[in-house]
Image (tube, rainbow, N blue to C red; front, side):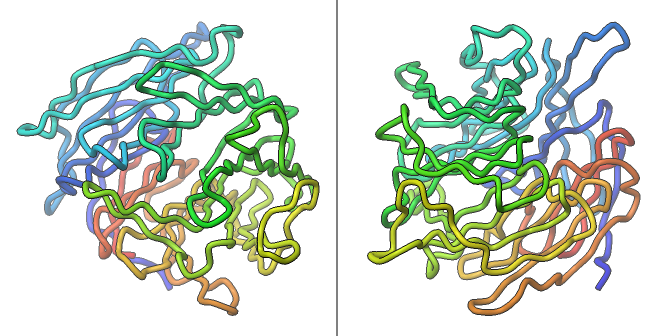
Length: 348
């Protein structure tokens, strides 16, 4: 079923990612990425307000392009951006004026390779001030924002690493999953960064670019729950256009076992590369916003023991790669497409 559009606007620079501020869901921030003909990259954080229309407010230029934006689940006034120079930048959101951002700190994560881009950043939902950062050199880094410590995982992807995500329940609290252009899904152990739990190329036929594990984060400033009744379920998405549901249990007693890849329990071809998976912010709501690259976006659900179901399909004016997406509220989402600079809100 096609979704209904609410509003549309064109960004100033190509948008690579989008976030809705949880403390004021009318405020939307875009991370932009502009590649110039001379090979240089720059970007900005563009700020918009969603009312009956999407209105541009202001922007914060950056000397490098932005590939990802994330909000701290333990402190919603902290925003982090991942950059084409291999660094991450911490921004403070003003407690009174949510459109005002102040740069707090810059951390050079990939200092050994000046050509390495930081492709994504993810906060741990369990451990405060811990983020994972991925790079075009195929590596995954763990950064302690408080101490400044950077941990390297020895198992790297052969090509670009695009995404990570943290486990948060039961035996997965110390596991971080990563996906890359080499079509590998790798499970790393936070306690033993020199070894991996498993690395599998058998799950997808192309690069793994999105990962969504069962999640629970019940901090007083932010609550996030998804598939909490299935703590060993993991969704992955790929350039091969498929979304897959994976059961991480291999053998009793229901835990990951080193060297054993997980099994696929369901999959669906969505007709476009499955770039990002963003769960609904509503408790007990397992709907997921899926960015399908060259084919717009979807709202997908999968009830227990049932197959994937596409609830809504939306393209609108998206004629380019649909990279960015987030939930404004349970009844509104926002998506962005890259080259055409289209930003649209719609009813999921």
